[in-house]
View (tube, rainbow, N blue to C red):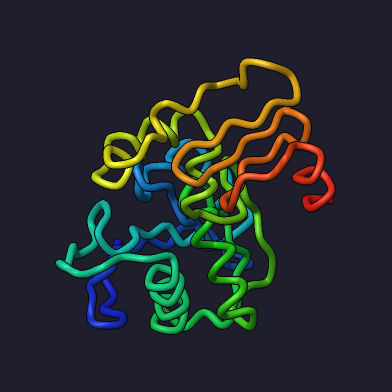
Length: 192
């Protein structure tokens, strides 16, 4: 176990095993402990780099805005700081989103990606589409001011569109999008 200072922040990391490097990026709720059950097995074939993102686990928690870009840049800088040119990257949950961003911003550092329990992006509309996301948005200041809470799980009639706070959910198109109200048939045509 060691620390490295990258981009002005102290990050905790641990190296185990031998072989090609494997950087593991844990999810928001677990930090490096996310991989507790798999690290020893992975260390039989790889040099596993477990680390905690800025603001999580044993890493420093500076008061600043956090973003996928900040965490991706930190991961690339950590690889450089410990002398690793390229690694496989294993990301889970939010760590998977960071891994995707790392591969997009620093492709020279990423040999391959292993992603589990993650999403391709994290944005407002992704949250608005899910039932739990709508509940979370309703608890935020923006959500409380809007009528997102009133979006039902399913529209009341097949083919109907429901309009709340500029969002449209059509059972025919199975999409939730922002914009002005349109008929369901025109919404279907525009989303194909």
